[in-house]
Length: 167
Image 1 (cartoon, rainbow, N blue to C red):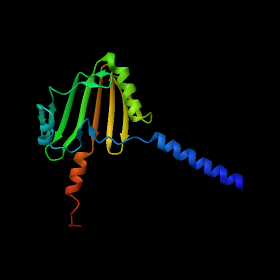
Image 2 (cartoon, rainbow, N blue to C red):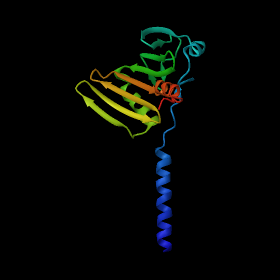
Image 3 (spheres, helix red, strand yellow):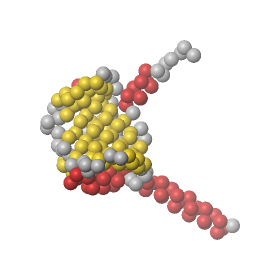
Image 4 (cartoon, helix red, strand yellow):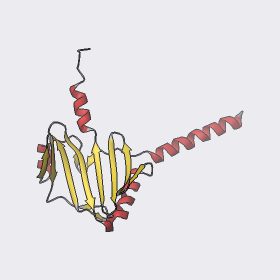
């Protein structure tokens, strides 16, 4: 009986330790900008230049933003804002020479628990951390794109619909 109790206790501790080691820290935004930050506040934080508008979505870049992410030099960084929900997505791209290092950075930060999707021109590694999805897209050209998207828009719409009393 003592053996069973010791064995069960040890098993629980090992499982709890493994869960703790594999736990991912939440992704609350990018650099100093939190998900849901309004464009106006973000523009005060950094110099943003509009690149494109698509309905309620506006895409910005910053000429003063550092393109250094760890040891990787990024080609481009784009900030996506929803007119109502604020900052919800970041897209970064880099060259072939930085591809392996970017993959190592993502695996170190997000862990090895990701899905891989292959198609004829791309390989995608996809991590889901709470309500944030990270997609690491490696192109046949060997360039890469990293997209980090929060659920800020869905959360905003959900908050609008919390008081429905029609049914």
